[in-house]
Length: 105
Length: 105
Image (cartoon, rainbow over all chains, first blue to last red; front, side, top):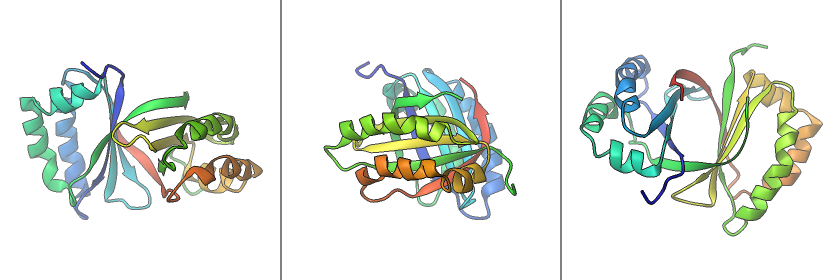
């Protein structure tokens, strides 16, 4: 592992308008797929107040590679794609972040 | 309050390249300004791995109005702006989210 720090995966998901309920149901099925992946930490799916077909996916991983190599290279990812990717238009750009500072709740 | 659910403020911050360290120092000064605002829950500032001049600010508020009316309408916001807004190019779009589902860490 060249990158050992915990990272946050960030994706703004533009779901095809009208398919939000179907997407949320599919996400419930997909949730245990990603959470069983090695290096998974936690996950949150949020829905935008200003534009309700937009969602935000935040996943905490033990390292960058846990996501980009581990999960994406696993058979789990194929099932994740099958369940979710057809809801997105356009296809989301996934980026990663490290925490700089925080104030806990 | 017409909106009582807790909300997450989300802003992708494009900091002028080369000014990242200065921005992070200013953010440390600005942090207690927002955290003393009524309805503040928690805060996280993250830095992008793929594009290091990009930051992600996530703030949890007790309600949408705690941010949009309470904080933005307060004298605290003037000080927040003075400390931080000159680092951004372009100026960020702030959006809000409600949590749909999560897997805790």
